[in-house]
Image 1 (cartoon, rainbow, N blue to C red):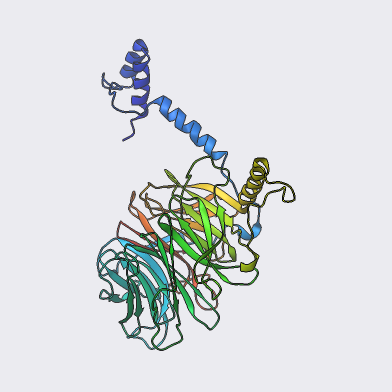
Image 2 (image 1 turned 180 degrees about the vertical axis):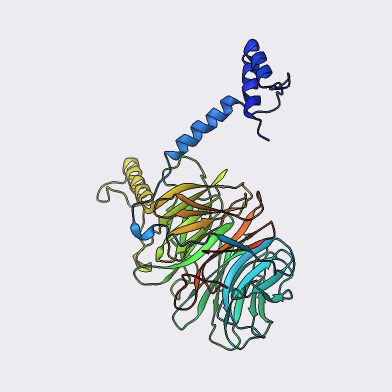
Length: 468
């Protein structure tokens, strides 16, 4: 616990031998005579001043965004909380998603809030009702808590669990279609990519330091994942993955961020010419840092209005750092070249030319980072940083360990809103933001949808934030 200001002053006077001043200060402040005598507390006025100087210095390295009116924070933002009381049981909330599903009890596809909890249950909530009624609770599909859910279509879901199992579940029939256990530890992330009218690529990332790739055909009556078509073994645990397309030929590329690395790694997915993952590039998010590992990119999310712009939540302590960066992807798979080509390509390769080439690459990577700011969201080395984009791309919401959801403007990197409704000091584990049919949707579009934010965490509260 931090000492009071009076105790700090008394400790400073006592440590520096200002006895008369100390006696006068203790008497006038009506303090105990032994105030400031504890020697086991390392916090002093000098240590606070050193920390303040370090903080001021770190502000000089923050990179604010450019003045782009299209990215300015829109005023009509979710800020009014509604605590959902209809959850059947109280347990830590592990994931939140909004899905368009066909259930056994309905005849048409409907929007639901899917909430998974630590007691191994999946709750489907109806957002169109005033109390967000729980329509169905499913507890038979997993023997361990669920960490991620991704829809295949309006019937089928891909479900990742802490046991390392990947489940293909039919929500309309309430039946398990297939179970795969190609990971030996937690499956923390599922990423998918669909070709037009064709098959779907499914990548599962696990704490066994592997990314497993499947090919699924959702158009058949009984789709199956089958055996993996490729497995990527990594030097450290993958923290986040996502599929993007190359700007030139539209082929899929898997972006992987892994622990203890400041790089984003770009892998071309297997093809008839290359049946394995192929590293086609990487991008350093701390190109001029002298530290061995400055942070880990813990969560990566694509901007909803720009498919090659990402927001990155980092593992930085004591506060989360937010980066908004352009992906430096090669235009096509066949155009991949050595990014470390020296400036003196026509002359001999020397140590100086290699250094100049590396500096050129670092400058390019630095220019790709549009925003690099502290969110002031407290976290520790054991936190799970999460972020979500607003639907119009004007800002992002980030998680924290103090129960506050913070909104950051992508134009400037400024903290715009601090949403407080969770228990103070509680860990926020999951966020969702987007368009949804709510019980009251002022400012909704022609389909009756409006912008909502949903948050959940270890205070066992599910909160839906609306704009009014």
